[in-house]
Image (cartoon, rainbow, N blue to C red; front, side):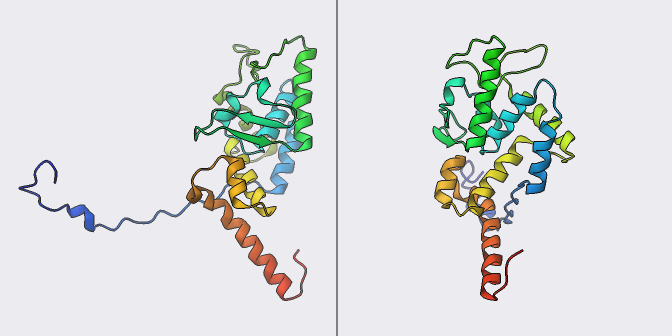
Length: 218
């Protein structure tokens, strides 16, 4: 209105309004006990067991659900996952720990044993839904799979992003440089990543306190 009617409204009255600061939401990381329940829940699955086990291993390396949808067999070189298209439009490489590499490789081997012809452009994760059998696992399919695992693990509101939060937090608790951690998770905003550094800083402060008074941290 100031621009449209400068003769009527000479100054912008909203400039004097002080905006309330919205606190950064805490990271919704899973505890070690909850992750143990997730791994145990995977053993209770039927035909989707190997796929969902591979899915959770990939999710536990900080990938977004949408990024997993776009992964092809060729995205996995046996050690790393290459993500050409990400939310930030910047490609990134995600190193997988040894156990996860073996799980993904076993899942792909199982599909070949079931007479599926795999190429570099074949989807890394496929659907088991009767209407979409063998097709690329969708975004909603990933959420449904994780929701089912959450029910078996008795974890309320388990969702794919829970594993991303856990991965980012764990990287910092391991002592990884925050800039390296951000590169692995694909966070471009330092402010958004701050939610994960808060816990690691708190843990470091607690550990430093116990060292200072000569007690072992439980």
